Length: 145
Ligand SMILES: [Cu+2]
Image (cartoon, rainbow, N blue to C red):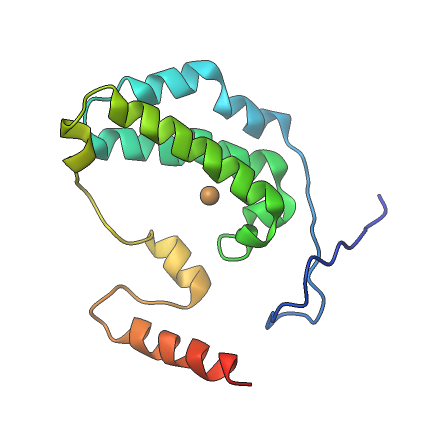
């Protein structure tokens, strides 16, 4: 298969000077976004269970179904499909909240940080370890160049 590069904008990327869109469509991953899975998530009554369900599938199914750049936990936001996918997840989330207002607006639980896997990919540590401060300082330094 030929590889094509779509350069969206001149952005800084430590791994290369060119940032390419890529995909590797997977029907099996897309199928995890089925209506029945979405209904299963909608059926959870508390934030912790619903969040875990939505985050697994349909969230993971959208990333995995497109593949390529959308699988990158840090850079997937550079793919325009990321915003289409996450706008849909926001819609699903709002529908879940509206099913039991106002209780679901304030229901919280679990971690309020990214998973350790995501933090590892970004070179970050859990908050409280001082790592975030130095990462933020690095971003600030980078933006001055
Ligand atoms: Cu996502």
